[in-house]
Image (cartoon, rainbow, N blue to C red; front, side):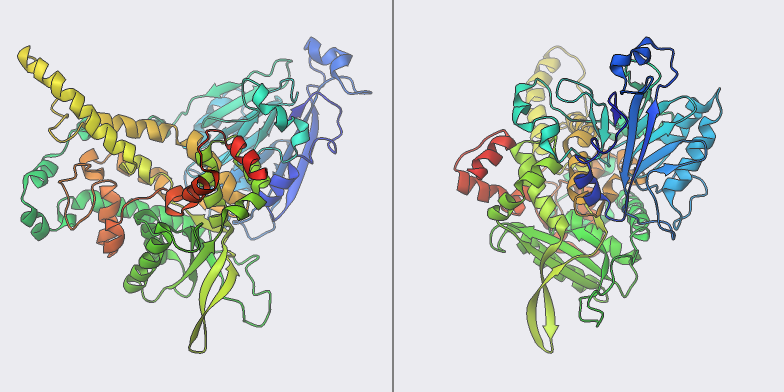
Length: 615
């Protein structure tokens, strides 16, 4: 963060340390420098804007915490090079950086590369943006370029890592960039938050930004992606030729139900299904390869009595998305290792998601009997949510709706990974309390937005075509041509557009929030469905092969929403999972129902819910 106050860091850092320490339990570091010293700008020569005994300038502080998953040597953060450049990096590089090895610290490689690129005074900025645009994987970063006193910051193309911004105002005169909100309310007076026209924090839109600190005005400059692939993923605009239903799909739609069963669900779209499985498997492999880390996973009893360590966990509702990720993870996790499956429930162990998780566990064991699958039954109550209310709301900030709180509580407890597992004492099966030690969790975010998994997608698909029926009749009277992509069963362009909108706002509605929730337990969230290769594959697949929301177009009892994902799961032997209806986590875990039963009312403000809980 940047401050025009004195150079003492002790009075400025405590409000961020609790959140940062939880995100990075393997170490914390800080760097401080007075910037703008010697500037010709009149602002910095005015003693009223300078610390006592100083000449001019502002204080720049960069704090970082470490969750080390790469590199054999102990890491440090932030990284400072010999030229005085500083990098604080949150995320993982899965591609786009030539020569980076799996066992190598991506932060150190990036720091060295950034410094070398920006040393070119003439073309450094352009080359830096070009290089950053090609980085594949989830990331957020802050980079200080010492030579020209410029602060760079940004998020990956989808916004898979949290990065919040506060611009100076009467509540706090600092310019702040942070992975999480301050945990000390006194700094900006949370109790008066509703009196202000805008929130204290806002999510930074994915992209790359810079601020020069040699002038009074803090003017943020946004730099467009300079990579064609990154720009195409940002826009998420499907080619019109891929919106019109394929001939093969239309043939399937008009065939009889007996023909559908005889030909088999997975034979009509083999190319699309095989390509999707290959892309998703590659994404899972990269994320699994960087999760096998034994640090902090030892048997603390020292006598072998603790359950076997799992390096990798899956947030597991038992739905098709999480089951498919678990099945693919099985391919790449060492054969003798355990995979933790974390399932959360808020109604005494009885909820739709718990029932689905138990059945999906059986199906995974049937198809992959050599794997050690460990289901962690995480049973919580609304009273448990009350106990962590303050921490939860601060972790969620600036996401503060009732839905955010419901989803957030379910994700937070699931990510904590503390619940009951089944163990054997001789021949007797018993329950044992257990907390997962996995540092990496796979989540299914992005699957619904790409493959039409929400109920509103079906509503748009059919509602739009109802309006087009009357319009089409009028067009025929006028002897004009109608759009053939609006078929008798649904409006494909409308569906394509709503999917584009959902993908383009995923960073703001979901990803920053979810990253903060998972990281609050010292774990890293990884989203294989949002791998650049997977998204590119889905985007270049005919929309009718991705989803078919017509209730009549089914085979083997598989619904048409998320048809591509369901077909992939079916192909891997997860037949029951492929048929399972989607439930949002707040409904499948029953947390929303439990809140409704207790409160007996609805509210739009999570702060109001929190205050009601407190009383």
